[in-house]
Length: 427
Image (tube, rainbow, N blue to C red):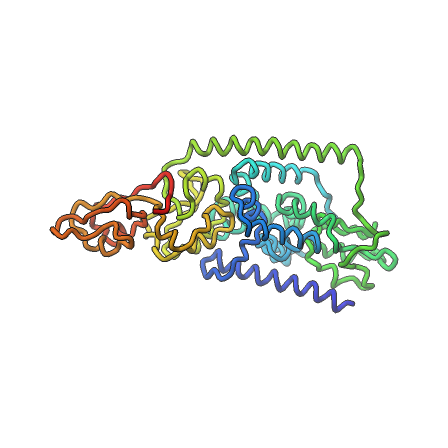
């Protein structure tokens, strides 16, 4: 039986190590090999809420069903920020003990996902763990500050961010509370020695009362390896030991109603925020698949994965001019045969279009050169610029120009200028 427990832990640990390595590789620009980021819950909810797709719905259902069956394994095996916290926790000598399940986390989740339902991800990207991880490892201020704060929290109160702040964790926790398989203590054999409680980073084990709060348990499964009398179980808890029971207490009812009311108010506020943002953005050039400034600003999570996978390094992080990523053609041009940013985007902010569609998508426009520009003509992949047989400045076909900037970059001596378009379209 002990060997089986060790197997559960080892499988979880191996999965977490693999996800952690792949996450670091992607966000440090080494390579982007697999689409593990399509399983990030915040991004999936964004795709389902604001940019519905069947694939996103199936992946979301997979995570929710997995959580219902096995608890919050997502937090300890698939979330890059959760894995980072586990690594940092190795350097902490002693855990902080039992944690309370605080109500304000439901209010945070209601605000975050309410505004998302209202049409904007601008609040989600300020609280989403995947975004924190990506922006930190791409050296964005928000991510760096958030991760530093979380590290401080780890050394004060262990995984308090995961148990009582993270909106994604809150949603998964509510499902995990009723999961089929739970961590529980076998009361007839448990000696209340406290070893499992001392090793628990979520503070969900109360060894005195021999109970486990599976809502905040992140299923790291460390407790399975330390019990000297084999009383820590990970399975379907016996009915007589069932920890979760419906309680129609007035306080719980009031709290539930309050949370729903906050969600509804946040949804209305999200619609207002979306409208305000649409009036304040500046003219920018966006990656292919963004479609327009308003849509993209309200969908992009600023995880910066597209920044790292762009082979020509033209995608830049959010700044004061525009609150989401955008294109800076001073560093290069948009590679005609590349859709790496589209493939990498987990949130649907860059719509999943095919390479042939991308090759016909206008993301900007140029003002044609006024002098001979043979290098620009040669660089144009769509023949929007062609050689003038009379030897004068090139002939320009605006209906063919996709605004990739290859002509401008390959022929810097010409007076070609490039400007954004209000709406991207496939020619």
